[in-house]
Image 1: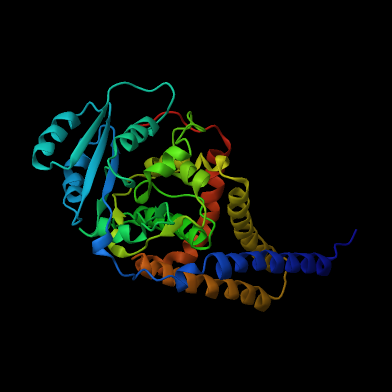
Image 2: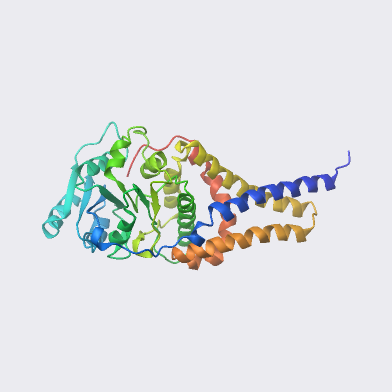
Length: 376
């Protein structure tokens, strides 16, 4: 039986047009928000509401010694910093007790036993929120440091009466080596998606290293009751449950970035990402569909490009198809990377765009299997 290569090429070409069209929809509609979003808005110092900063720590003495004083010394009218000390055994208790004498606005919540109801840091977060004196709560981690003493002051300009949730950016420090660039690009890519979706009115996740929400919003939605046995993705799942475009604001001013050190080995980074991605299956259906369609069409786009070249299709048309998507991507990425201070990664994005296919395949089991139930 003779193979009809012309028919096969036609099918592959029209499939590429369809898949490429879906990709262009994402980059022209959902992922183009950075192009038009302004991070330069006027702060209102006279209306800055009091704020509770919440940090959960389990054996994080080194990080607390390095970063906590920076948070405590924020230039903000009225705020408190609550550290939920979750069964630490590394001298954290003594350090916090001594630091409290220097900073009266430091409040410590000690968790002395493991919870049988809440896994991971959910009990610590819940108790810290209960102890918070103020309505607006800003969240970060012990290993994070703000880039500016104006972190809180700039975040608060989003604390409007009709808003209840603010999503920020939490990048990693720049360093040498390919691993550092991979981690930073993956962090950028994740933020590129969830921030663009939020700007488009479809928020689906946030990162606990830099976000804020109203205390009442947490308790009105019964906190973590609905997923008590899932350890990772506390912030993802809570935002996924409560976020609506009408109550969500995005803050990408560089004064609000919260930096942390990336993992130093491939194994540590992959383990961390598997744990974080394991909660994706619990997202709302619409979010799983949008994220899944983007990932699938991304992979199929390259598969179809290669298939057309292998079967001898006109390489000029294949190049045009790739070029159109590349130019649109380049515009979106260059603007987003400029605003998020990651512009040094721009020249590597074509390579990372390919590596994302490998990354998604490697991480697929983490999205399918049962999440881990151990924190630290």
